[in-house]
Length: 287
Ligand SMILES: [Zn+2]
Image 1 (tube, rainbow, N blue to C red):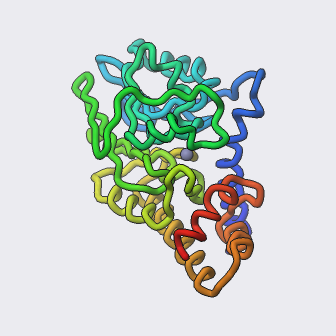
Image 2: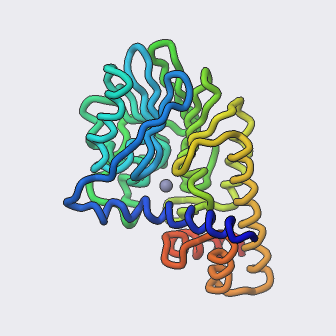
C-alpha cells in the first residue's frame, strides 16, 4: 500500500470519527460552517459537520435527505434559503444516527420526516449509545420502498437490506440519475454498527442490489460526491475487508489481532467507533 493511500485511508477514518465527535466538542460553541454545492439541476449537497444533506428543490417545496445534528439546523436552513424560497416539506432519512437524524425535532413541526421502520425503532430504543438526547423519530415509516412526489418530481427511498445498520435507506432521484447512499458509503472505510443491526456480510449484498439502479452520480453519507465507479470501488473494499477478516478468523486469530490488521490495512482508528461497534460484532458474524 502506497504512503498516499495510507494517508487517505487514515484521513477517512478520522473524518468519520470526527463527525461523531463534533457534537460533544461544540457544546455551547458555534456550530461549524456548512457549504452548499450544486450536484445537478435542482439538486444540491450541503457539506460540513455531520452527514451530507441533499437538497431537492421543486416548485411545491423542498425535499431534504437527512438533517445533520440539531446544532446545524439554522445553517442548513440558511443554505436552503440561498437557493430557493420554497419551504422544506419532506425529510427522507437514511438512518438513525444523530449526525444524520439529529435535526429531526427541528423539522417535525413543519415537515414530514420519513424513514425505514427499523431506523425509527433504533431511535425510539436508543440503539446509538453515544447519541445526544432528544433525537426525534420519523412520523411516517416504510419497510421496503416509499416515494415522495412533489412539484412533478420524485424522490424514492428504498431499504435494500442490512449494512451500516439494519435500517439503511438509499434515496434515488430518478430524473437526475443520482442516489444518496447514507452511510452505506461513508468516508473510505466502513463503520459496521452491529449494536444498530449492521452486517458486513449483508452490506455487500445490499450494495449489489442498489448498484442495479440506473444512476451515474452518488452523494455518499460523508465525503465528496462521486460516481458509480466510486461506489463500486467502495463495495469492493468492503468485500476485501470481509475476506481479510474471515481469513484471519479461520486462522484462529484473536479479536485483538484482527483489530490490528483492520487498523493497519483498512484505516480503522485505534480509538474509533469501529473498534467498539464493528470489531466484536464482525468476529461473531464471521466465526
Ligand atoms: Zn451512520
